[in-house]
Image (tube, rainbow, N blue to C red; front, side, top):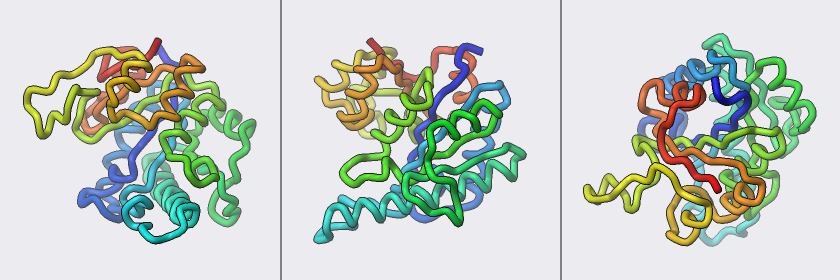
Length: 234
């Protein structure tokens, strides 16, 4: 196994087949892929988005931006709890920590406690974003990855096996990049993570791998050190 500790960034859409809501079958399939990766012995932290429940930029039109972002943060907590349930049904000990204090359903985010959970082989799911409006869950992934000492940030994609020069589902001539630098991602305007997240990873020299989580076993192979997807580094 090449990696000891990684952070996995998931979109909320992975918890549904229809693009909206939370569906048990889709969540179970996702949990099974994560379970196979966890069985390698890796310490695994997860950040989950809320696009299946709320997109502030679209649904929050006319709302105060901070209010719309807080609604999105609550959506990530809902997704974190659903993923926790599916993982524990698969026999994997899991903890949810949230940047917003919701003591009845999850622990507050405490870095040293998160580290202890990881050392005890528990998957830690971070909900509530950074706890602040105006920041995306991509930035949360970079931030939490740095805080827990992850060796790699894994950006899961939906049936797209890396970073392409254009959308491969619309442009068959699009080419896939095997490797990119952080600066190339920013200069080319590639839609990998938001610029704040990329800059955080660049400054800390934290590598990013973009891969297709729906390709069976790909997450497990990646953690074992195989070249999968697109590597973004210095």
